[in-house]
Amino acid sequence: MKHLLSIEQTSREEIDRILRRTAEFKTNRGRISSRPLAGQTWALIFSKPSTRTRVSFEVGIRELGGESIYMTAADAQLGRGELIKDTARVLARMTHGAIIRTYAQRDIEEFAEFSGVPTVNALTDDEHPCQILGDIFTIQEKRGRIEDKVVTFIGDGSSNTAQSWLFAAGKLGFELRIASPKRYQPTAKLRKRAGGHVICTENLKEAARDADVLYTDIWVSMGREGEEARREAELGPYWINESLVKLAKPNALVMHCLPAHRGQEIDEKTFEAHAQTIFDQAENRLHVQKAILAELVKGD
Ligand code: CP
Ligand code: NVA
Image (tube, rainbow, N blue to C red; front, side, top):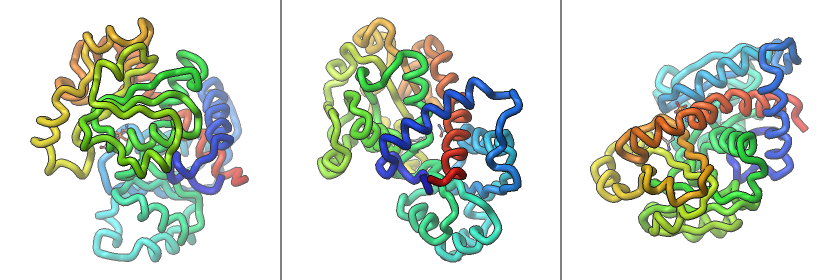
């Protein structure tokens, strides 16, 4: 595996390898283990804010024996118009890998192409692959094989997390239901690209019925702040609350990628009732990303 740019471009075998290694890293955390990043420095280049992704990568790189430098695009000459392909070729001479959070998916693809160093998507407008790999690990850790599960995504079905779920369903074969108003559902073109067993519906109750997982993300993703009022009005009914949870399987997991906006995509009571799962989910970002980094430096 050379880069991790999207779930779409990651094979089933690579996903399985990452998930297997995640379990090893989680079990062995804190014991003396291998340091595959020893002697390396990785660049974190973030154009959007982050708590979980930044901290889990910085800690993960350190635990694997490497060092990291964090920069925002605004601090770099990128913010003054230096081209991505030039930035990529400079950083490739000085660092061993890049972890990038930005807007356009094509920007990280261009960076990866021109730098040649392992490049990781730490969230773009299109995908959030590290999040969804951590989430799949969490589901399997708690409930076993995802292949047998029904995952219901509630809220903004056009978001980066929903899109990564869509491609994950195509690769792994579980049933994905996306409950969103029509204009927030993935396009037919995207669904065709992803394949898999996917149901997109405006019928929230039907989507939640007998689901194994109820999953949500914020209604207003980073970069969409100007659409806040419209999104609140249109996505209003698409939230997880106690009565929706009752429709799902009795032991259904309620998951949230965080940060949470209580009273929007989830209510306070439901969030707190499922806080253990949600914060396990957050913790697993660390373990899965260590596995991703280890696979990338292995390079095959
Ligand atoms: N879930 C997630 O990626 O969180 P951050 O935006 O805090 O990194
Ligand atoms: N869809 C959200 C995910 C945040 C982790 C966003 O892009 O802001």
